[in-house]
Length: 441
Image 1 (cartoon, helix red, strand yellow):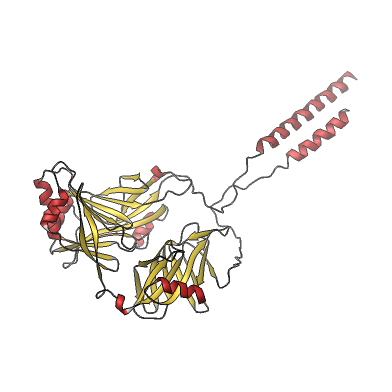
Image 2 (tube, rainbow, N blue to C red):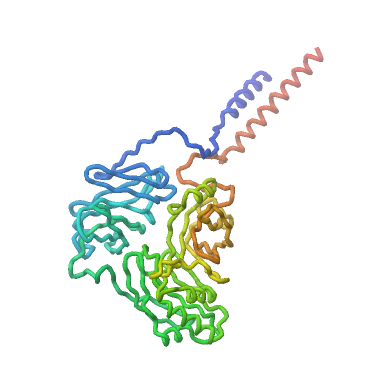
């Protein structure tokens, strides 16, 4: 009987020692080769490395930068036949090329191309780019042309078409005029702006309109220029200095304590307080200034700046500045004023919002941590001068990456440990009894 029990416990022990082990996630690069096999006819694929991928085959030439961090494969499907005819009917012009552009993760899941920079080789003149969703609604995108290459930034839609606009639909020379909301606490007007590529020029506001927007002295004195409905590529606004001066003086006359001018770009906002606006008026050597808030990542950092942040966990970067147009002079000294910047930011899975901060990086590599907060899915920070800013994660956690290596399965781990303990206890008891028997003999 004891021999039978010993054999049974030995079998249990061997089984318990065979529970599966899972490797911990290792950030080091593994020498693993993966072959991607596409099941979509006419699809071109390329691996994504450090956010960059390119395809150049069979007359299809597409390069991409700024791909999502979890993108492993770029997929480009040229639209031909009925698909091209359909997308041609969605835009006001003659389609020269159209593509389904997206990414896939390690498991083959589709990832929308949103915020990626794309360059496509297309023949034509006066080319325009639009995105089109599955319902056929198109949206004009800001684009630049260099030789035969057309560059644009994706907006998350499924399809992208490059076309020549119909002559009757062409706007004025390089520009188009629309209206945008300009509002105060209670009142709102619609002001004329001229759009030229990534730049919006605000037409000079009538003083009576400014007075109407500011309203009563008991209000907060904030004037907001809303550009959020414009193309995603808009990142610059030309402001008339006379309008800024009148906003400042009128707010002071009504004794508002928090007068400010805020510009809401499609990708973020900049708020200038009263001291900053006064500094602009005093330092401007012309009648117009350009306010810029541009998502540039790390592309504008010089060697010293790159060296200063090379060991940091950087999650993007922005450039902000004020430029006096005719004098070609930047206004950097706010003379005690404060500008507040706000940009949309999604916290990666596994990371903590409070561990993200924005840093100022000077041209000489000097860095300064700025007061940063996370509000309504936006990173917000205050500055006393404009320059290059980067988003840094200061925690030790690592983001959850879809398709990453398996780090463990605890679903039945307790059972294996129980079997292991029972086995050891059983064998120990048998050994003790056998030792006692020998002692008695």
